[in-house]
Image (cartoon, rainbow, N blue to C red; front, side, top):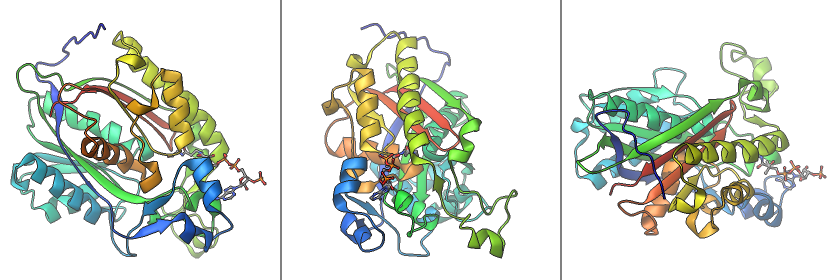
Amino acid sequence: MSLSLKPRHSVRAKISAVGAYVPPRLLTNADLEKMVATNDQWITERTGIRERHIVEPGTPTSDLATEAAKICLANRGIGAEEVDAIIVATVTPDMMFPATACLVQAKLGATKAWGFDLSAACSGYLYALQMGAKLVESGAHKKVLVIGADVMSSIIDYTDRSTCILFGDGAGATLIEPCEEGEVGLIDYLHEVDGSGASALNMPGGGSLHPATHATIDAKQHFVHQDGGSVYKVAVRKMAELAEGVLKRNEITGSDIDCFIPHQANRRIIEATADRLGMPLERVVINIDRYGNTTAATIPLAMDTAIKEGRLKKGSLVLLASFGGGYTIGSTLLRWEF
Ligand code: UT7
């Protein structure tokens, strides 16, 4: 295996801890059968989802993000006052402003941290990971919390069977720190956006284009709208393309990867992507059956699953890949360092 690790920065960044949190309340396929014209067999066969966790109404994204961050910091054995910056990737911020990162900062007691939110839908965590890494690689920051968190149940129309079966709520937090001597950490990434796909997956109401009015509410513009078939086709093609791209640029193939952690939107998309990358399914982390699509949280939640299943070890070569509304697409190659 040839892995060209040309350091582009004198400081390299690594993921040093992970924490995940999902609300306790379960929404199963059987529950959904009572709400819309669907059935467990269709949902399981078409998506791989069996159940998802959703919040009690009124629970905001910052609560989930804060819980995940607390677990992450406890796993690392440090206090919130040591955190330099907080980036929250989300499409379901508590409010239009202030940023959810500010609310997490206050709830955590991260007294010296600054921060901001990042909006890139299901690729939000991967984009935030690179931003956090750049803050560390600049030498200016030593501990950056990168969080993917979404309360999708706050923007889902539970009378629309084409979307309500897909999404769940959750949060995953990771701590980004400088590598120690001899460590590699984050190696490379490829990101792409294609804004021509904006109409295929969006929530049109509540922004400056369609500010909230009685009419926007009547037209259900404050819910997720998705042309599932179009999104599916682009997802299968582009997620594999960017994942292949980052492997090729580093002169490795899918068979060199110890653990592939893709965005969890549909089990069939994951399997098709793994197949194109030549990756056996036993090296792919899949937890969509338990959580559904938690948007920005899927990848850090899947990291947590992989850790608990003993599938990530110090030195593991890991590939992350995402696809989401925008369109936004991302892939990241890294060495696991704990
Ligand atoms: O993370 C963000 C990115 N999002 C994605 O990656 C999602 C990508 N898209 C998908 O995962 C899939 O397109 C879906 C899971 C959303 C839909 O699966 P599909 O295989 O593309 O189904 P379809 O939309 O083509 O619908 C097939 C049939 C239709 O019935 P007819 O027209 O064949 O009679 C639908 O009305 O299935 C019907 N259908 C359902 N039936 C039972 C759609 N939703 C349901 C449902 N239960 N929940």
